[in-house]
Image 1 (cartoon, rainbow, N blue to C red):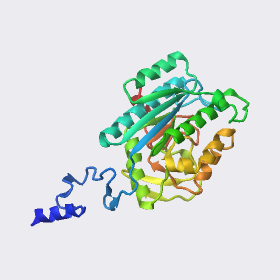
Image 2 (cartoon, rainbow, N blue to C red):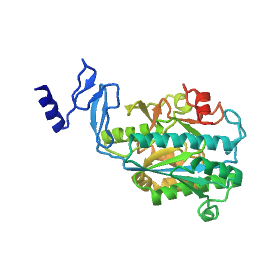
Image 3 (cartoon, rainbow, N blue to C red):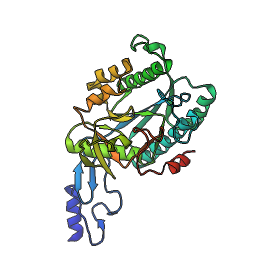
Length: 322
């Protein structure tokens, strides 16, 4: 009778929990294992099951890379005070680990990664090519001349190239993106489960609220420096909070990129204050969330309010990606 009942529950898509044996007989798993099924259902104890209606089929990752400039628009040193190429290399190494981890969890998920290189010297570029040579990565050179008519003349070449690389990444996302697009800067270190957690949490939360969202992988210090209200949501394996500001590292859907194209385009036309002014305007209408605790570490100056996330072993993550 017990076996028959289990089969009937499976037939109707129901899951059983045996708290005495600490297992799920319908899933054939212990309760401390991952009970969720990508593109089908998200199961979090003790909150139960969420049917996945917003399935993630593909991700286009676009990395903006500049291996020369220490910190754009600042005269400060980054944590560990190394040459910029060291941060770019470790950032890409950590992203490769996260992408490969996600592929082992979700082998049917299509993941494509592009690097937009902003005039790296041959030595730095060859180093990066060596890191990605066995991965599904494509390196594209930044086309500065292409954007001369689109971007207002800037006081510095660094500012212009920063705006141009951002606009090129947005345009590529608009033209080549399919489902989700993850815009990434090259001064973030990523934990191995980062991408898997973002995908699974995107599916769960977007399915619950019935709409596409924005996701930022970093838990910035500035989030704890004001009294702004936030909502706490349950993701795949951690809490997420609603936020109303990000930098230019975030994930969203192709639909939202198209819907707010004017905001993305205006972000790159001139140097605004804050830089992400028109992106942050989107969050007045759409939901953006960031994880607690952080999935990615922004390696800026140690005193930056948009830098190091709290409760992270910075040195350990840095050394793991040497």
